[in-house]
Amino acid sequence: MSDVFKTTKQIPIIDIISHYLPDVRLRCAGQTCSGRCPFHDDKNPSFTVWPESGRWKCWSCNIGGDNIALVAKALNLKPLEAARTIARDFNLPAPGAHRPMSPEVQRRSQEVARERALKAAFESKVRELYLTLAMIYRCINMVFNGPDPPPAVAYWVHRLPEIEFLLDELIIRDEVRQVEAVRAARNWGLC
Ligand SMILES: [Zn+2]
Image (tube, rainbow, N blue to C red; front, side):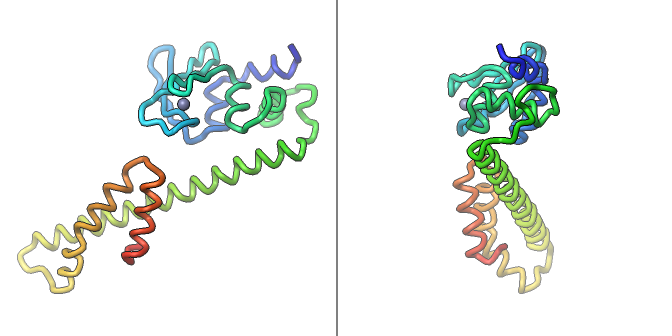
């Protein structure tokens, strides 16, 4: 086995996950950690990690392996490229780790970084819109329940069902429905 494979196995799998798959939230109990799988649209925590042995598995995708297999899957790389990528990113002394990336690997890793940035921007947009709508919703309800609602509030009272609908849609972890909700909020002049 080449040295780069050996050295990259020393990095804790948890560190690998937080570096390459920062969206994955793991809950640990006993010897295992679990969370939603980053490789499929996971509603349940199908993704299991064994920190002790450095292994992972998704029970739905039926894939798993070690550090290298995880990075290979996450960045769509061949095992040797994945091992070199880990060695480079974690500053491990490994032959070949500091060789410049091939244009293809470079392109893929830039693509992954770009996708991750877009996803983070969208998630923060959804969060912001949710908080704004929740605040409007609370305020309208407060004024509406008061003894003497000002006439301007009638407009917003009229829109409560729309806002309620959007709040429900935004909280669902379904990107397609969230995109639709953001679009609707925009059309309705709410953001
Ligand atoms: Zn999966």
